[in-house]
Amino acid sequence: MNTNDHARNGTGASYKAAPNLTRTVDGVTYAYRELGPKGGIPVLFLVHLAATLDNWDPRVIDPIAQNHHVIAFDNRGVGASTGEVPGSIEEMADDACAFIRALGFDLVDVFALSLGGMVAQGLATRHPELVRKLVLIGTGPQGGKSTDRVAATTYLDMVRATLSRSDPKEFLFFNRDAEGKQAAKAFVKRLEERTVDRDAPISFRAFWSQLKAIKDWGRAAPMDLARITQPTLIVNGDNDRMVPTKFSNDLHCRINGSELIIYQGAGHGSIFQFHEQFALAAVEFLDRQAVAQSPDGGAR
Image (cartoon, rainbow, N blue to C red; front, side):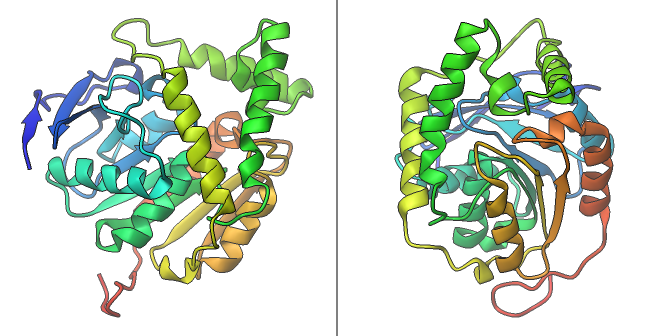
């Protein structure tokens, strides 16, 4: 394995000021940012469909980074990372594993939204020794019927946003009631707080490849979620149009010992609309002492 590190030297007080860093693994250069105190188990952030490093809400990351080492990265072919977007969720999970190990970590907590949550499930089942805890937000299981309709919903809301001269995330992530519209505008404004050293936008080809991988994930045979033995927190809004809320309930029923939070009056971007409440819940979950069972039956 050939690695090339560009100075992991600084963590910054806020995500909006975190430096852009790179790490090269097997010919792929991954773009990433990190902040928070080093030491302990880092928290790896896996972002949603069509997103890059600039799509993480600093009001979500900053409270977690106050006492945790946070690492957010662009997977292969996304944003400033080189290469082509993998054709499957499983390959994306393997890339995430390669990136984590290249940074020198043998154990991480995984914080994942939407597409990222699918990748996180792949990571937890294909490389279970690498994952201590999971936070799965607005996501669904492999083989979840109607997950393959994400593309149609995405295209529809992109058209609606274009016609109203709005950011597509305002339609995709939030309800169109007064509270949802207000939360959407505030979220988009927070994403604009970083004014320098922004990430490269995702290409249409990469976006299309991600949509195809999500379709294949939804149409595949269901995964045996009993294989996920890590402590898991599942979060969504009660009106998720992107990845229907029923899938969060399904994950909760099928992942033994998992916890479920459903925010009322929220959609796919529930954690951005209720960022203060969610940040407290996420920190409490990550900090809680628990004994998880390893695949061979031993405690870790």
